[in-house]
Image (cartoon, rainbow, N blue to C red; front, side, top):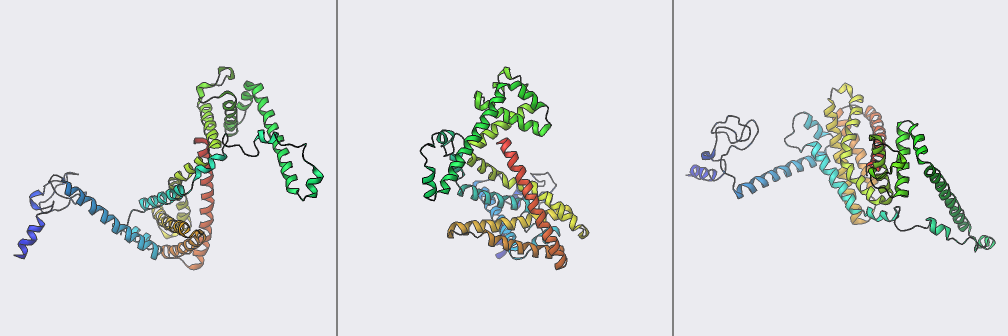
Length: 382
């Protein structure tokens, strides 16, 4: 009787015997009637049409499965430095989330939090063509120099005022120099462009970008085709690139806040160009350990994931308690990383300390180079 109840309950599900097929609907692999799942692709062996209830059952089953993996990944990552990577490279992978996907998710979450919590558009007011600052030429020229009594200023302890006065004069002189320089370029634009052509590639592209920015200011040019024939500028790939760079640079000057926001949105994906290079250094200094390059890369992914978890926690703590806790969580990460290297690579404390210092130095150098290229590239493509 008990057996019959179990069979009845079992037959209410999608994989009951009457719906079993002899070939997988997903990959076509031959199946036996006793197979609940395809041994080739793991799809459920069922020919039953998908009902609304079946759809939600599958959705929640996948969600619960992912949650259990996520919980196990977080537990191993937070409590046992290096263990999750050891398990993963030994083949225990089904219990943990994919390290690449996990890191990408965490980095996107962190940078989204950072982007949405910071009003970078606020800085657009300082862009060119926005609200005038005290150093705009019109304000500078309206400064009443004749009404300044120098002796009175000095007697009233206003050396700061004298410094401001000197700054105003210096700024006016700087503006005049730029205007004279631009006037010379516009007096003979064809000759100036011919001189630019004599330069090597990178200085040439930079000089062309400056010249195109000048044309945009003087001629109200928005597209490369708008450049008048009188400048005799041919439609080459290099000239188009320099012109597009000039447009991006002009946008950057007008909207610095929006530019910062766009930079932050690119950072999660930049990490995946940066970490593979860093993994090469791991592979070189641990070359005797016989780990493959990919296994070093997985180690990097797991530790970088832990860093983002700590940064997210730090961000939440700072937001709630109005404090600065990032230094504390970075210290925790440094200690964690050291023990992760000890457990994963199984070398002595002294060797690990030396390699720890070396790798952190390389990490910061690579991060600086990556950010420099990102900033430069973003200015030219914004």
